[in-house]
Length: 194
Ligand SMILES: [Zn+2]
Image 1 (cartoon, helix red, strand yellow):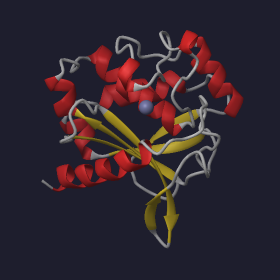
Image 2 (cartoon, rainbow, N blue to C red):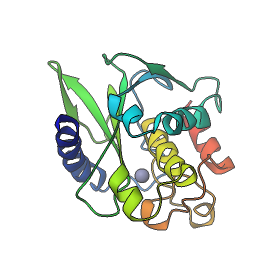
Image 3 (cartoon, rainbow, N blue to C red):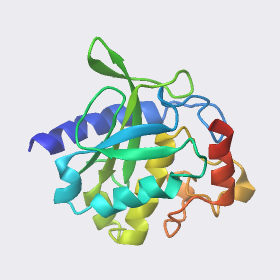
Image 4 (cartoon, rainbow, N blue to C red):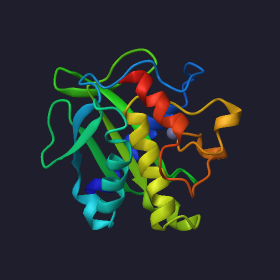
Protein backbone atom coordinates (compact mmCIF):
# COMPACT_ATOMS: atom_id res chain seq x y z
CA UNK A 1 0.00 0.00 0.00
CA UNK A 2 1.54 3.22 -1.17
CA UNK A 3 -0.16 5.42 1.44
CA UNK A 4 0.71 3.24 4.41
CA UNK A 5 4.34 3.12 3.38
CA UNK A 6 4.68 6.85 2.99
CA UNK A 7 2.84 7.44 6.25
CA UNK A 8 5.20 5.06 8.00
CA UNK A 9 8.24 6.82 6.61
CA UNK A 10 6.77 10.18 7.57
CA UNK A 11 5.99 8.90 11.05
CA UNK A 12 9.57 7.79 11.56
CA UNK A 13 10.87 11.21 10.56
CA UNK A 14 8.26 12.85 12.79
CA UNK A 15 9.28 10.71 15.71
CA UNK A 16 12.79 12.12 15.43
CA UNK A 17 11.58 15.69 15.07
CA UNK A 18 8.89 15.67 17.71
CA UNK A 19 11.13 14.30 20.41
CA UNK A 20 13.89 16.79 19.91
CA UNK A 21 13.68 18.87 23.09
CA UNK A 22 12.25 22.26 22.33
CA UNK A 23 11.69 25.44 24.27
CA UNK A 24 9.73 24.93 27.47
CA UNK A 25 6.79 26.94 26.25
CA UNK A 26 3.25 26.60 25.07
CA UNK A 27 4.08 28.05 21.68
CA UNK A 28 6.90 26.89 19.43
CA UNK A 29 8.01 30.45 18.91
CA UNK A 30 7.61 30.09 15.15
CA UNK A 31 4.66 29.60 12.83
CA UNK A 32 3.55 28.67 9.34
CA UNK A 33 5.15 31.07 6.88
CA UNK A 34 1.69 32.19 5.74
CA UNK A 35 0.59 33.03 9.28
CA UNK A 36 -2.71 31.73 10.63
CA UNK A 37 -4.51 31.56 7.31
CA UNK A 38 -3.52 28.73 4.99
CA UNK A 39 -4.96 25.74 3.14
CA UNK A 40 -5.02 22.07 4.13
CA UNK A 41 -5.13 19.24 1.63
CA UNK A 42 -7.04 16.12 2.61
CA UNK A 43 -5.34 12.99 1.27
CA UNK A 44 -7.73 10.33 -0.05
CA UNK A 45 -6.94 8.28 3.08
CA UNK A 46 -8.98 10.81 5.13
CA UNK A 47 -12.20 9.86 3.36
CA UNK A 48 -11.40 6.16 3.05
CA UNK A 49 -10.87 5.84 6.82
CA UNK A 50 -13.95 8.00 7.50
CA UNK A 51 -12.07 10.90 9.12
CA UNK A 52 -13.32 13.81 6.97
CA UNK A 53 -15.67 15.20 9.64
CA UNK A 54 -12.97 14.81 12.30
CA UNK A 55 -10.53 16.99 10.38
CA UNK A 56 -13.29 19.47 9.53
CA UNK A 57 -14.08 19.64 13.25
CA UNK A 58 -10.43 20.32 14.09
CA UNK A 59 -10.08 23.17 11.59
CA UNK A 60 -13.30 24.73 12.82
CA UNK A 61 -12.27 24.33 16.47
CA UNK A 62 -9.44 26.83 15.96
CA UNK A 63 -10.97 29.08 13.32
CA UNK A 64 -11.94 32.57 14.37
CA UNK A 65 -10.36 32.51 17.83
CA UNK A 66 -8.39 35.32 16.30
CA UNK A 67 -9.65 37.01 13.12
CA UNK A 68 -6.28 36.02 11.66
CA UNK A 69 -6.82 32.27 12.05
CA UNK A 70 -8.63 30.23 9.38
CA UNK A 71 -7.49 26.96 7.80
CA UNK A 72 -9.37 26.32 4.58
CA UNK A 73 -9.85 22.96 2.93
CA UNK A 74 -7.86 22.59 -0.29
CA UNK A 75 -8.52 20.10 -3.06
CA UNK A 76 -4.95 20.27 -4.24
CA UNK A 77 -1.48 20.05 -2.76
CA UNK A 78 0.73 23.02 -3.29
CA UNK A 79 3.27 25.44 -1.93
CA UNK A 80 2.37 26.45 1.61
CA UNK A 81 -0.56 24.03 1.85
CA UNK A 82 -0.66 21.62 4.79
CA UNK A 83 -1.34 17.92 4.22
CA UNK A 84 -3.53 15.61 6.28
CA UNK A 85 -3.28 11.81 6.25
CA UNK A 86 -4.77 8.84 8.08
CA UNK A 87 -2.84 5.59 8.18
CA UNK A 88 -1.19 3.09 10.43
CA UNK A 89 1.90 3.25 12.62
CA UNK A 90 4.02 0.48 14.07
CA UNK A 91 4.79 2.68 17.11
CA UNK A 92 2.36 1.61 19.86
CA UNK A 93 0.10 4.29 21.41
CA UNK A 94 1.08 6.89 18.82
CA UNK A 95 -2.16 8.48 17.66
CA UNK A 96 -1.09 11.54 15.71
CA UNK A 97 1.93 13.46 14.53
CA UNK A 98 2.65 16.94 13.27
CA UNK A 99 5.78 17.59 11.25
CA UNK A 100 6.70 21.03 9.88
CA UNK A 101 8.66 21.25 6.63
CA UNK A 102 10.54 23.77 4.63
CA UNK A 103 10.62 23.48 0.88
CA UNK A 104 14.20 23.16 -0.37
CA UNK A 105 14.55 22.94 -4.16
CA UNK A 106 11.09 21.40 -4.35
CA UNK A 107 11.63 18.81 -1.61
CA UNK A 108 10.24 18.89 1.91
CA UNK A 109 12.87 19.03 4.64
CA UNK A 110 11.70 18.70 8.27
CA UNK A 111 12.41 21.71 10.46
CA UNK A 112 12.50 22.25 14.21
CA UNK A 113 9.52 24.55 14.86
CA UNK A 114 11.37 26.16 17.75
CA UNK A 115 14.09 27.28 15.34
CA UNK A 116 12.30 28.59 12.28
CA UNK A 117 9.02 29.16 10.52
CA UNK A 118 7.88 26.43 8.17
CA UNK A 119 6.32 26.40 4.69
CA UNK A 120 3.84 23.60 5.34
CA UNK A 121 3.19 20.81 7.78
CA UNK A 122 2.05 17.22 7.53
CA UNK A 123 -0.43 15.81 10.02
CA UNK A 124 -0.82 12.05 10.27
CA UNK A 125 -3.38 10.24 12.42
CA UNK A 126 -2.95 6.54 13.18
CA UNK A 127 -6.20 4.65 12.94
CA UNK A 128 -4.77 1.30 14.05
CA UNK A 129 -3.51 2.67 17.38
CA UNK A 130 -6.71 4.57 18.14
CA UNK A 131 -8.63 1.36 17.47
CA UNK A 132 -6.32 -0.90 19.49
CA UNK A 133 -6.36 1.42 22.51
CA UNK A 134 -10.14 1.96 22.50
CA UNK A 135 -10.08 5.55 21.23
CA UNK A 136 -11.73 5.06 17.85
CA UNK A 137 -14.81 7.17 18.50
CA UNK A 138 -15.65 10.73 17.45
CA UNK A 139 -14.85 12.34 20.80
CA UNK A 140 -11.40 10.77 21.12
CA UNK A 141 -10.46 11.01 17.44
CA UNK A 142 -11.34 14.71 17.50
CA UNK A 143 -9.05 15.19 20.47
CA UNK A 144 -6.20 13.98 18.28
CA UNK A 145 -7.13 15.94 15.14
CA UNK A 146 -7.68 19.17 17.10
CA UNK A 147 -4.41 18.65 19.01
CA UNK A 148 -2.37 18.12 15.85
CA UNK A 149 -3.99 21.04 14.03
CA UNK A 150 -3.15 23.13 17.11
CA UNK A 151 0.50 22.22 16.57
CA UNK A 152 0.19 23.30 12.92
CA UNK A 153 -0.87 26.74 14.18
CA UNK A 154 2.29 27.03 16.29
CA UNK A 155 1.09 25.71 19.63
CA UNK A 156 3.44 23.44 21.57
CA UNK A 157 2.44 21.27 24.55
CA UNK A 158 0.91 22.96 27.57
CA UNK A 159 3.55 23.11 30.31
CA UNK A 160 1.65 24.98 33.04
CA UNK A 161 0.53 22.22 35.42
CA UNK A 162 -2.59 24.13 36.44
CA UNK A 163 -3.71 24.40 32.80
CA UNK A 164 -3.08 20.83 31.65
CA UNK A 165 -6.36 19.23 32.70
CA UNK A 166 -8.49 21.44 30.44
CA UNK A 167 -6.04 21.95 27.59
CA UNK A 168 -6.35 20.12 24.29
CA UNK A 169 -2.62 20.78 23.83
CA UNK A 170 -1.46 18.72 26.81
CA UNK A 171 1.13 16.10 25.82
CA UNK A 172 -0.20 12.67 24.96
CA UNK A 173 0.97 10.92 28.12
CA UNK A 174 -1.12 13.28 30.30
CA UNK A 175 -3.90 14.10 27.85
CA UNK A 176 -7.59 14.00 28.65
CA UNK A 177 -8.88 12.49 25.41
CA UNK A 178 -12.48 13.46 26.10
CA UNK A 179 -11.48 17.10 25.51
CA UNK A 180 -11.53 18.08 21.87
CA UNK A 181 -11.99 21.83 21.85
CA UNK A 182 -9.48 24.52 22.85
CA UNK A 183 -9.64 25.71 26.46
CA UNK A 184 -9.62 29.41 27.32
CA UNK A 185 -5.91 29.02 28.01
CA UNK A 186 -5.36 27.40 24.60
CA UNK A 187 -7.29 30.23 22.93
CA UNK A 188 -5.22 32.86 24.71
CA UNK A 189 -2.02 31.12 23.68
CA UNK A 190 -3.18 31.17 20.07
CA UNK A 191 -3.97 34.87 20.35
CA UNK A 192 -0.40 35.55 21.44
CA UNK A 193 0.65 34.33 17.96
CA UNK A 194 -2.05 35.95 15.81
ZN1 LIG B 1 1.44 16.96 20.58
